[in-house]
Image (cartoon, rainbow, N blue to C red; front, side, top):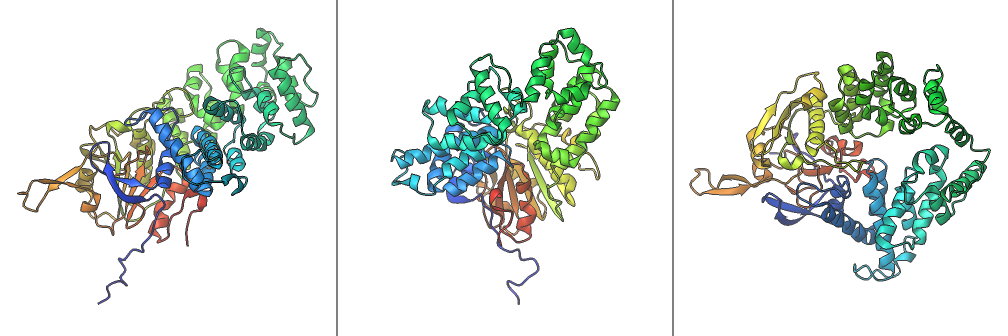
Length: 556
C-alpha cells in the first residue's frame, strides 16, 4: 500500500514568522510560544504606532522593545533589517515606525563600531557592508516633512551632533522631495526643523537651477530675510500675490467658473484654503477645492461635504474617484480607512463607492477554495484606539480592522464559516454577493479571549482555519481523559486540529507571546494587512515556501 504518494498529502512548506520552541505565557495565561528575533520584530513593526499604549503594553515599553530589536538586528543581520525598514515605509506604509527604526539602525551600528553596543565583538563594523546606514536613512524618507521628523527624533534622543551617514542619507532624499508645493505644505513655523535648517545641515546638491533657487529661498525664509522670491519659483510668486488680497476678494474668487483651476494652479490644499479664506469652508469653498484634493483627503472629509451641502454632481465626481482601482492603489490607504469613511459619513450617497474602494484595497485577499473557518477576535483587548498618523487616538480599533479583513476573506471564500469570538463565540451569516461594509456592522463585542474553545466549537473538518486576533488567549480546557473523570487539562490548537489542516494566525498587535507554534507543519503566522501578506495563503497551499515580503513572493 502506498504510504506517501497519496492525493491527500500536502507538501511540507515553511513561512518566515517562526517560533523557537521556547514557551512562556500569553497575557491571559495560556501557553505562549516565543518567536525568533526577526519574527518578533516583524510582527511588532507592522503594528507599532509609536508612542501609543495597547491593551497589554504601555507605549514606552512597546517602543523600547521595538528599538532594542532593531538595534540588535542592525548589527547581527543588517541586510534583513534594512530590507524590513525600507519595506515598512513603502509597501506597509508605516511612517513613524520606519523613521524610528532607521535612526536606531544607524545608532546601533555606530555604537558597535566604537565597541559600545554591548552586543559582543563587533569591531570595525563601519568598514563592513559600507553604505548600509546611508541607504537605510534614504529608504524611509518618502515625504518632504520626514527629513525634519527624523532629525527631530535623533536630536531628542542623542543630541545635536548628527552623524555623517544620517546627513548623507537625508541629502539623498532631499533632492527628490523638496519642491515648491512641498515647501508651501510642510515648511511651517510649527516645525522644529524647517526646510532651511535641513538644507543648511546636509548641503544637498540641487538637481536643477530652480531647485537651487528653492534651497536658497528656504534658507532666507527660515531666517526671516526680506529677499524677493526668485523668478524661477512661479508657484511661490502666485501664492505670495494672492496672500495680499482682502477677504472679500478671496470669497469672490469662489464664484468664478475657473475657481477650481485657479486654486489648483496656486497649489492650494484644503487646509491652506481654509486659512486663506479666514472664515468657514462653505459649499462654494469645498466645491472649488475638491478637484485638487487627494483620495485620502476626500475620504476623510465626507462629513464636511455633507454638512456644507456639496451638490450631488460634485459628490458623483468624488465617488468616481473612489471607484477607480488605480486611484485607490495610489492612495495607499489601509483597508480599514474605507470602513472609517463609511462609518463617519452622514449620508448614504457615498456608500456604494466606498464599498467599491474597500474592494479595490482588498483586491489581493485570496479567494479560497473549499471550506474555510474564519475566527475574528472581538475581545476587549481588540478595542483600544490607536493613533494612526495623527496625535489623536483613532476610533478605528483592532477589532474593526480584524472585522474588515475577516469579512472580506469570508465574502471571497467558496464555503466560509465566519465566527466572532471572545470567551464565547457566535457564527455570522455571510450572504452571497453581499456588502463587506454591511457585514462589518453585524459584529459585536464579547468578553474574554478563548481561541481553543472557539476552534473546538466551530471546526468541523474545514479545509483550513484563519484566526484574526492579537493571540492573547486564555487556556482552553478539556477533560484529561475521554470519560471526564481525571479533571481538566489545558489544551491548544494542536490538540484540536491535525497538522494536515493548516491554521493561519493573523497577528494584529505584535505582542511577544504567540498562541501557537509557527513557521512549518501547517501552522503559520502573518502580520500586516498588505498585499504581500494576503498572497501568502494561496502561495503556501500551492506548495511553495513563503519569504519575507521585501524578499519576493515565492521561494523555489
